[in-house]
Length: 316
Ligand code: SER
Image (cartoon, rainbow, N blue to C red; front, side):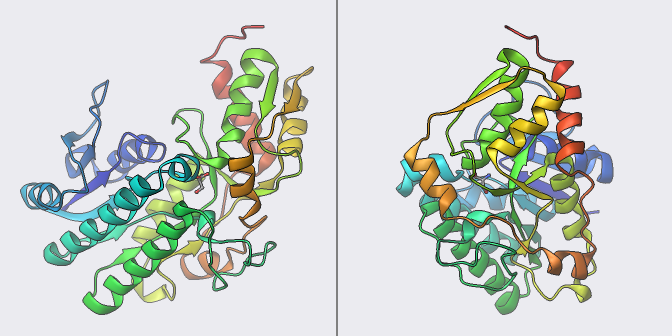
């Protein structure tokens, strides 16, 4: 088979997607790349890649005979809002170069979009698949533009480009990546360590979320889906649960008695969260390629805490 290339392989999604792709397709068929160098050995080949440089992408794609690219290199919402110019350069510049390399070398491309592709004028509850997308963050601007560019490459050049609008992702292995939804991950870590968490979002801020094993499975499944069944490509709404900080805290308290949450709201991240939907309608993903989550809030919370307890020691 032609090989699978992952960009941003050491990031929040990549560090879990790479091992999953190695298991599914064989480590000899997977090439991980990142602009950083790994601190420990990976199961598959690793190449340094700055994917704002098209020649570097082309060289690796040709040398390894790549047929599928999972393009994950990107700045997340909160970091992007602090460095909007860098976010445009990386998020859009690299996607354009990956799609162009895919056109030249007949590769399929996965690129993640996000709940951040929506904005304040989008219907907030049960947000439809096809609806108003006028985001007010630079992250969202790059996600909408990215969705359109990927659809353009599919329509105009026949590039098999597919994507998902991912919700906040929660993982016990991948490090948080500078996202607005990362409060949820932090809450688990601090609950185990300190039985206390200071949240940067207001208690009633409702956002879509997903446990990382579901997200990794969704990414692999959408790329393996029969293309004849796909009406949408870039990008499918996707969700598994939607909750507020106070609801997550209540669920954690069932397993960590005495856990206390307080709030010190960060206006930048609160404004980002307030511009996003409260819950997506992911019916198109369910109908077109059979999406179904395995983890709801209570199953995820239990699994997160079981895993973190074996890794982290309580400090207080
Ligand atoms: N988790 C992302 C963020 O908060 C949303 O796509 O930036």
